[in-house]
Length: 75
Image (tube, rainbow, N blue to C red; front, top):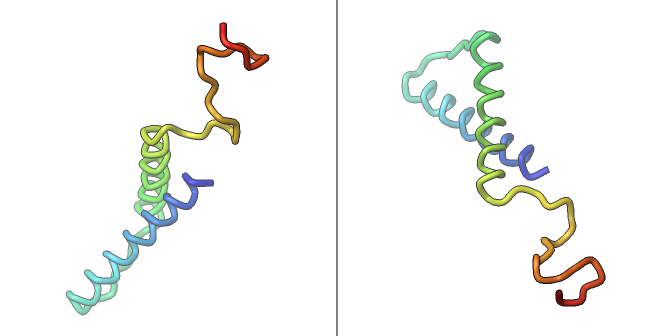
């Protein structure tokens, strides 16, 4: 879920920058589908890579320390 939220955030930042560019140039920007779809995919790929760098998701379970076996006793 973190990747989805981060990807949407990156897309919103991109849309904001494009809107700012359109306002500054006082023009209307028309971006074709074959350009915008890869940009959206790239935004989610970057978000996914960022999540992997941050440690990823452990599935809701805490990381197990290698000094303990499954019963919780020290080896």
